Length: 410
Ligand SMILES: [Zn+2]
Image (tube, rainbow, N blue to C red; front, side):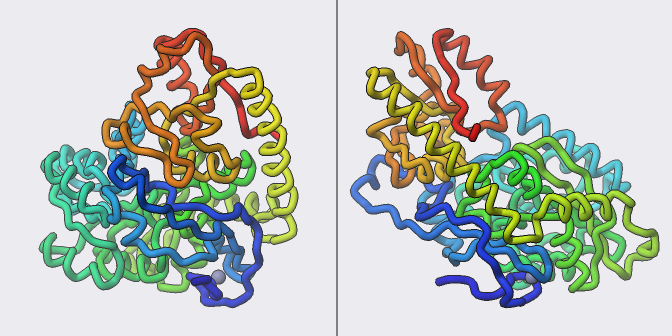
């Protein structure tokens, strides 16, 4: 099914800006005992809402297929870099919002519970909500109380009952963009958040994805692609407002957005000047003009065509090519470039929950990073490019004869 209306403002004035062809779910790695099943693929197309600035996927997919059909395997604390990021997040958000140790914190999309645990360490009373039963179990093991469910208005009363009061802080990182109904998600936040509370969310910044041609941030699990302008419009429509935005270096460039009730006791305090600055930059970059995306599409096509010539030349010379990091975005890359197990030997990975599985549709086996040691000489594409610098150091220790390829330069 295709979306014909903006998920936020309901306008039907949607313009196609990106079309990447047919793609499977990006975060559903295939276990060995399911190799006999086919992979469902759906058109991966982004539309821009000309009225409010929302960028959304055209194809509607089922959250149950995205998060619970196989065990969802992305853990948000899967590297030292990500752990440090979430420790910093808890500290700086607590400082900015004046969070006190007895306050109540809700984390939506709490995944394996790592971040919620950081707020628990500050003495807060915490609860996590996550749609993946496998992740909820992991979080419970960590000692983080977690409800398995998809967040929205329907889930809000259950959360309030479980917490016993309205949370002073609701955090939702890399999850708001996953919501099939962002308006319902925002209304769930509005219903739950304490009158003087703060909602903070972080997700990849669309401005950076476009500027750096990181088209692989686009996949079926990411329903919306956030700009500050869109966030401001969405919350304005429900009586809340964005009062501060930080740009952070995570997932290749993210925004951390702070939102409050319009009726909050000191809500008259104007939004920071950076909010208007962000919107000016977004407008200047052409993010709200459908025609301005044509060079973006042309550049990613050129980068792909050039890279395919390079990689098939390596194959003709009999040289092995592997990928590193079984990230969701890697599946957008592999499918768009049409690189499957006949070209790529394997995807190396450190996460035990992915090793032994296969990439969706392209069916490339996922094996431990240590397998790189077996090659005399090997070319490698780092799929989790946001961790590239750290990974290159680690991999060079396993095999100093690795040549790293950059597939993104047009
Ligand atoms: Zn709209």
